[in-house]
Image (tube, rainbow, N blue to C red):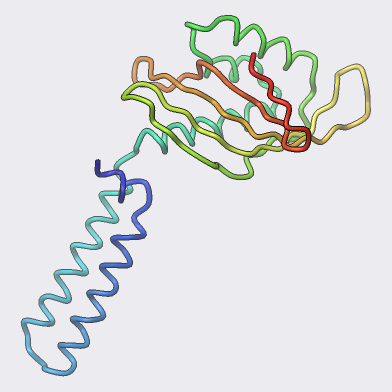
Length: 179
């Protein structure tokens, strides 16, 4: 409910800045001490909202952080770290991820843009993003560049978000891979 400012405090910041400017203008025109006090009060309230926002970590921010950590572990070819983000309730996904990572050597992996976030319930959420990876099949020296649209579905397990399903769409061909 409060995620309208805890994900991005830009709206309260802009509103606060506009009100500070307006009340400062009133104070300059009238030299009324009440206007200056209102100006300072609005500034302090806006500042406190921004500080509170930095303390609150929403589910969306936790999942986005997880996605960026996953990309870093993929780039470093750290199979065990990648597998630690997969739920134990879906061992077939972990087995498939291990098999794919063992046949590839990743040279780079980065998230280009998060495209969507949908919280299906208190303990289940879906995030979509575009990612690029440069990888090569281990026995072959040639490099391969690929851009994918990825959707990960997470479930909360013991205060951590773990991946339970994923879907990969090749934007060039439109083919969907959904193991």
